[in-house]
Amino acid sequence: MTLAAAAEDRPVTAAIIDGKGYAAGLGERIAEQVSAFSGHTGRVPGLAVVLVGTDPASEVYVRSKGRMARKLGMESFEHVLSEDTSQEDLMALVDRLNADETVDGILVQLPLPRHLDSLAVIKAIDPAKDVDGLHPLNAGYLASGLPGLVSCTPLGCLMLLRSSLGDLSGLDAIVVGRSILVGKPMAQLLLAENCTVTVAHSRTRDLERRVAQADIVVAAVGSPEMIRGEWIKPGATVIDVGTSRVIRDGVTRLVGDVDFAGATTRARAITPVPGGVGPMTIMSLMHNTLLAAFRRAGLAAPELW
Ligand code: NAP
Image 1 (cartoon, rainbow, N blue to C red):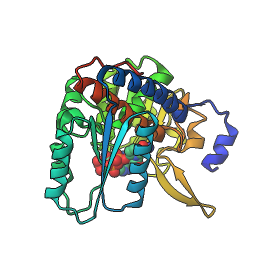
Image 2 (cartoon, rainbow, N blue to C red):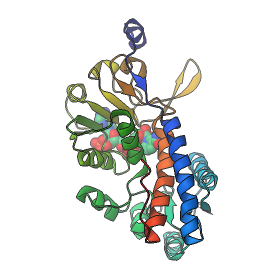
Image 3 (cartoon, rainbow, N blue to C red):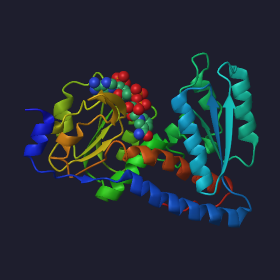
């Protein structure tokens, strides 16, 4: 029996976690706080986004980040540099943005062209303006339980988990994937919520058994539907970060790391792809920019979630 057929035979148990709706509500709260910030300081938070080269997907991301910042009342500074930009010129731009008082958040769109050293660029960003949360100092703050700036996608995932489950304390969680961008910070966030956390990766043995024990599954691999519906523990909550383009019946579709149809017959709640984690990533970036602006101005940051 195919997974889809299996899903038809079993009742759907899962509520759909509406990332798009949650992100819209968060956006309204951010916009209110942008006004409050401007009332206190006489200026609005500023987000600088740097794009090197002409990668079409990166161009779309950068445009949508700028558009969202403006929609929420922030200032957006977009710096588009040519593909052959030197390391020196990129570092000089980062230095200028670090020194610019109107810039609260700096995001360098990754991946950079191969001749550029991404880590050196990330390390050059003022950690107080590192709204992508990728600077080693911010990763260290997160691991140490200190306030810093947290990588946007895992932060958005945690917001969705809290909104769906409330208190996460004592739950068994598995994070599949251990990237610096998603898996590792996600594991740290869940640990800080008092979950018991397993981090799985490409060398993990018997992934099925480990997934089957988890109350929370966060999948961040980039392998279409590799986590099968029947692996999911009945009543688990599933956050699917993965996005892969696949061609089915001649149509290109975006699918996650989890077999959605199968998982909906076992999980208590699950994020869809698209419409789950994706909208939260960009809104978390806006959240981080607002947070950075309040902190840099010496103001108490508002609680937004
Ligand atoms: P990544 O850097 O490529 O990391 C993938 C991780 O998956 C690695 O840790 C890898 O393990 C692990 N992995 C690979 N094959 C595996 C397997 N068979 N079993 C278990 N783990 C396996 O990717 P990423 O940047 O974290 O992104 C992951 C996915 O999330 C991608 O599809 C990406 O497009 C998506 N994403 C979505 C958003 C969003 O806003 N929706 C944001 C960010 C990322 P090793 O470390 O052992 O190689």
